[in-house]
Image (cartoon, rainbow, N blue to C red; front, side, top):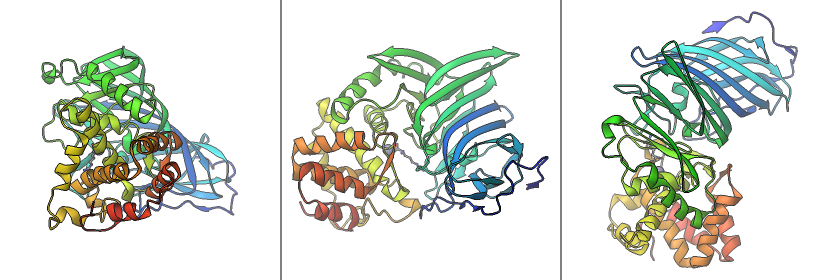
Length: 447
Ligand code: ARG
Ligand code: ZN
């Protein structure tokens, strides 16, 4: 869709500029993210009507140009209609094609600029290459909103690759009968005319696949437990089963803080929906989302991701084992701590898969493609890799590596190569052979 600007943008004479690239260069999702700028903050004002699925949005996005730009892209599916775009207050021309929103604006390298996108429509989820539903998933009473790896473009425009982290404010208006839950800290709630606006501030940088705005008939609690501000939203149909849900967080966070370093965010909690067929749970930042009351293992998994995945985020999707292998290993640690099963027994059970099994054909750091990101080898062989590393370097160096990883790359991005370098530096051992066998080669590694 093409629309003409009402007035020309300032500095529109920047003839030297070139368009920012339409993708961040990730081989698994080539059109995800965009080049030429870096975003610092999103202020998303959303108005949603669950009965009609009508969404109205105004996204105010603060970014900095990293090249001389004549135009730049945002990721937003074209089932949502963009009504207007301004850049630094002046109307800007734009086009929508597939999941690319292209905005014409002349911007100098280093220049900070504010883009306001007004849009509306009836959002729908997308189907991932692995067949799972991803994005704005409608439920009987609202929305289940999980966005890994590509759902964010189904409900707001952004630079939707994990390398461009930003802070967020969500102002979400819903009927009084519903609650809107997002990441970060609940900072205000105000009602009028039968509608309530919830404002959530996510104050630490976040990758867009970790954002959520989930809407439903939730019971909301906001309490400080064990020093953690714990905000939970539970579907009332699960109120009985979910008794004590809020209180389950602090003990896990305390144990993980002792192993991984301080909890990285200003609040915690979770969203428990009652959606048996909706798909996956997700480590949405500060506040994971679950389609049912989580087991102890699942709770530990999603809370471990707050360090590994959310605070320290991979640089590309191929490195997803840095999330899933670490979170699975943390499940093993938590089960050991509770006296359920030792880490060694968990490793032995996973390693017992026969060498001829297809499981061993997928190396976790090279899983194949976007359809293979969330398959067992990424999780279980990823966790086994960490245990093999621990066996090689010893407990002292191993736990120093976990803490060092969380602190060195806090709020940033890192790669498998970065983990190898840090592990070698901390342990003083050569680890390239071990990393290669466990992470990059098909076949069952010898012990
Ligand atoms: N990171 C999530 C977890 O392990 C899983 C996400 C799965 N996403 C998908 N599209 N299949 O908790
Ligand atoms: Zn996970």
